[in-house]
Image 1 (cartoon, rainbow, N blue to C red):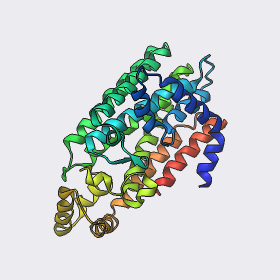
Image 2: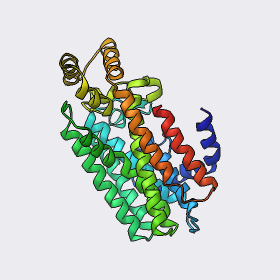
Image 3: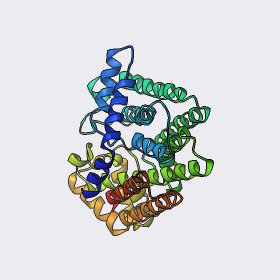
Image 4: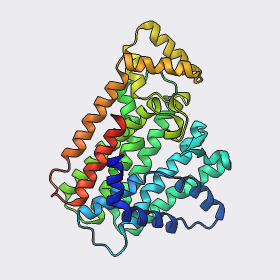
Length: 326
């Protein structure tokens, strides 16, 4: 809690500007679109992705006339669009502690609102006047779509490999973190080596953050998650703790796990039994070890920057990501 408070105290002004930018740039022609998008956008969320863009831009000396927070809205819109689409594809019931948008309205409305947010992100990217930024955002949308398609293709696949899993989270999560940090450097006109280092920072942070989320699905309850515990498995999504355990379980334990995964429905007692196997075969510990390596890699990329407040906050964000997985 101390670390989270420390970060929030350091970025409170930035978060205020980000909230204002999200509302200001959400200017559709239809009131329905504003309400559907706002249902998700303003229901909470850490604003981590736009915050990373603001911090990296300032770290690189951004002096633009337009607020960096205005452009940072790109990354929250992209993130919200993927959540709207994912919930429709997966049949998710809860998001951020409330009914998913497609449950409140209907799937077509949720999908089209997600499409609007993607288009709004590209419009804001074009407003930077930098072809490099437009290219980054276009690449992100392409890779995120690929990641979602790959995940759908592997739904319920008990033979999913660790490499396949890494490819999915790279496309679905890490590229957005990487892009936020990369664009922050680009709009500040940072030299190539600095831009590359910050892009690497975002990539490793994104991988670790997703691994922490995957662990939380098995270690936290609905009140903390904002969605039911075990939701990933119920949706047929195999994440690293399960993949690792399946590869090392005895034939009998593996058969039991496969039956659970294929049913996609299980009691609290069965879920407790699964958690026991994840601990016994090291699935939880291994995922934490993998996350720790990416956390260290993220920290290493910041060594070339001086001891500025923005760098310290970026390091604190890495430690916060680690604390969620530890």
